[in-house]
Length: 343
Image (cartoon, rainbow, N blue to C red; front, side, top):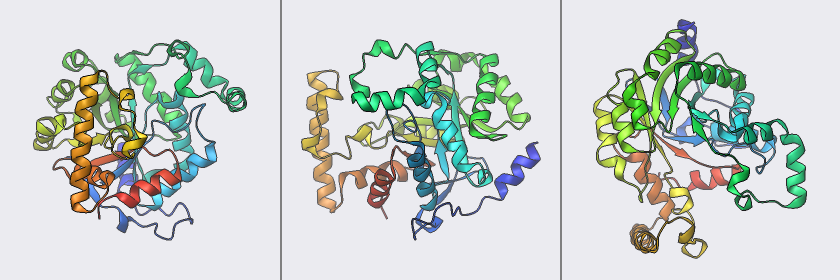
């Protein structure tokens, strides 16, 4: 099994999935080593957290998005079993079921969906037209209607989660499995390591890593020799991981996936479009963020580039970063972001 997976990986070539873009060629996307693995990843990847879902577009629009990403040379797709109750993985699997060996699919496991979300996933075909007719917005839903998330990193659950991801993605293996927002105490206990090694030997996953919300969890993950990657927040507004985590990862030959590189839109939107109170927890933080953004806009203007270009340049070119994720939800968003990336 492992030899077959290695062969498929070695056969990765350029991916002509769509005829919509004449520029579809990997000349427009640099490829990089992914730590000490044999993966070659595009400098920008597509984050798939908001692919699918009751409040998003139809499936064809997302399939076009995947094809467009591939046309631009993106070969790294980052998803998770919980994104849109599994629909993100399903659509990704549908898009690349005939091109599996030519893309790198990274998924995550560790979250448990509450019963309410699992039920919603089963009746999505009924809910979508109702939501459109009533013009219900996701951000207007009471938090209680979504249910509370919990986590499980036990060996039994991780095995079950991987099998579920493989079914939804229509594949025999994951290029990368990540522990999803794993807490420090779970990392330190290390109960997850033997089962991930077993899954790796069985050919179900090629590599595994940690996706961390807290830097100490990422740093703890680097202590395990089997960890091939770490995913962390990195932007001009959040540079904490650049000071210690990313240099240590590079020194250990661990690939780094940078997420939230545009600070959830703060580094893309115009000043008049932003209500910082929606992003900050205090008036002091609002003032600090406003000052940061002004200084960054001034810096970008002095270089004659947009703030988003400055932000993408920082995240993608920071020494040690393997791939920077773009969180586009449509072809238009992706094209706009890629047009702004530094040349």
